Amino acid sequence: MTTNLQARPALSRFSPGLTGTVRVPGDKSISHRSLMFGSLASGVTRITGLLEGEDVLRTAEAMKTMGAAIEREGGTWVIRGTGNGCLLEPKEPLDFGNAGTGARLTMGLVGSYDMVTRFVGDASLSKRPMGRVLDPLRQMGVQVEEAAPGDRLPITLRGPKHAAPITYRVPMASAQVKSAVLLAGLNTPGITTVIEPVMTRDHTEKMLAGFGAEIEVEVDAEGARHIRLQGQGTLKGQEIAVPGDPSSAAFPLVAGLIAPDSDITIENVLMNPTRTGLILTLQEMGADIAIVNRRLAGGEEVADLRVRSSRLKGVEVPPERAPAMIDEYPVLAVAASFAEGETRMLGIEELRVKESDRLSAVADGLKANGVDCTEGEATLAVRGRPDGKGLGGGQVATHLDHRIAMSFLVLGLAAEKPVTVDDRSMIATSFPEFIPLMQRLGAEIE
Ligand SMILES: O=C(O)C1=C[C@@H](OP(=O)(O)O)[C@@H](O)[C@H](O)C1
Ligand SMILES: C=C(OP(=O)(O)O)C(=O)O
Image 1 (cartoon, helix red, strand yellow):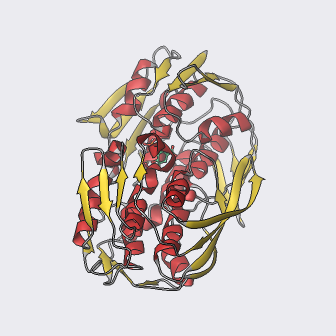
Image 2 (cartoon, helix red, strand yellow):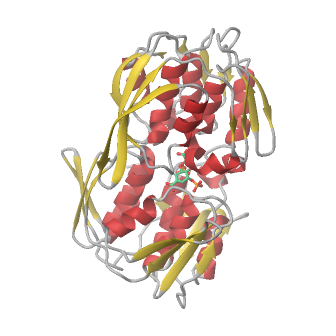
Image 3 (cartoon, helix red, strand yellow):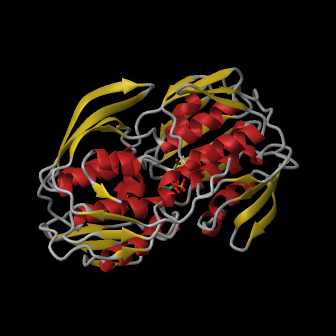
C-alpha cells in the first residue's frame, strides 16, 4: 500500500473573494478509531465518510495485517472484525508512516495480546516520544523488547507475562495516551481506570460505548474524569457515519476570514465541544462565523459553518482551551497575523511533540513572511497586520508536517506577496483534497 510521498513545493497568492460551499473529509480521530474498533469487534462494521488520508490508510493496513477483513465497497468501508480477543500476530512490522494517533493507539490495542509486534514510522514519527504510552503499558505488564533511545520508534512489544489492569492518571493532556491505556484495557481482565485531569477529545469513550463496551465516566470534585472500562467484554460491529473533520475545516475557515470579500460555507463539520476551541477563539477575535443547521449524526453534533471575511482583533487564548484546539494553533497563528493587535497563545507546550516542533516551525514560518511574533517555551505571541501589507514573500520549512504546509498556504491567500512551502506531500496524510478544494473556492495555489 505504502505510497511514496515525494517532497514537492507549493505556492499560494493573494486571493480575494473566496466563495462557494465545500465539505471537508471525515474526522481523522474518528476514522482511526472506526477502523480499529470495527477490526476488533465481532460481526460487520460499515463506515461511510471515512477519511482516506495516508495516516488512516496505514491504520487500515495494520488492522488487515492482524487479521481483519477490510474492503471498500463503493463509498462504504466494510470490516469483518476478528472477533473479541482474536488479533493475529503480524508477520511484518506495522508501518505507521507519519501517524502518531495510529501508532500510539495501536500500541495500546496490541500491547496486552500474547504476541510480538514491531512498530516503525517515517522520520517525523521516529522522533516523537512514545514513552508517554510505553510507561503505562509497562505498568500493565507489557514487555518492551526494543525501543530506540528516549523510547522512540522502532519499538517492539511483547504481551505481558501476567496482564494486570491499572489505574492511570494521565500526566499530560493527551487523548492518545488516554486511548492507548483504555485500548490495552480491552483485552486485560478486570477494570482499567484512566483519570484525566483535563478533558481531551472523548471519541474513544463514546465510540467504545457505541460498540458495546462496558465503560463509564465519572467526574470528581476537582473536575477530573475517571473513565472505567471492564476488560474482556464484547464489541459488536456498528454502522458509522464519520462527520467532517473540524481540524481540516480550520483551513478553509481561516482562509474565508482573512481573504478579503469572501463568503464560504463548510458543511457537515463535527461540533463535539472537545474539538471546537478554534471556532470559539475566532469568534472572540470578531470572526463572522454562523453555525447553522445544527443536527445530530451518529451520536455526534454536526453543523454547517458560514464564514465571511472579518476584521479580527488579537485575544489571549487561555491554556485550558489547548486540548480543544491542539491541532489548530498553526492556523490560528495565521489568522492572528491579520488581526489588529496581539494574540497570545498560552500553555501550548504539547505543540513541540507533534509531527514537527510546531511552536518553532510556526514562529520561523511567520518570521520568514514578515509577521512579528515571539516564541516562548510554551507560548506564542503574534502581532498582526490587518491589511496584510508587507507580509508574505517567504519560503516555509514544513518539517514533514501537514498542518504547517496547509497553514502557510492559507497565509499566502491574504498576504501581499506569495508564500512558498517547501513540501506539499504531507498534506495527503490528513486532507488529500486540500489544494483542489481550496482552488474550487477561488484560492490561487500552484
Ligand atoms: O486522539 C487523537 O485522535 C488525537 C489526539 C491529539 O494528540 P495528543 O493526544 O498527542 O494530544 C491530536 O493532536 C491528534 O491529531 C489526534
Ligand atoms: C498531531 C496530529 O496527528 P498525529 O499525532 O496523529 O500524527 C495532527 O494531525 O495534527
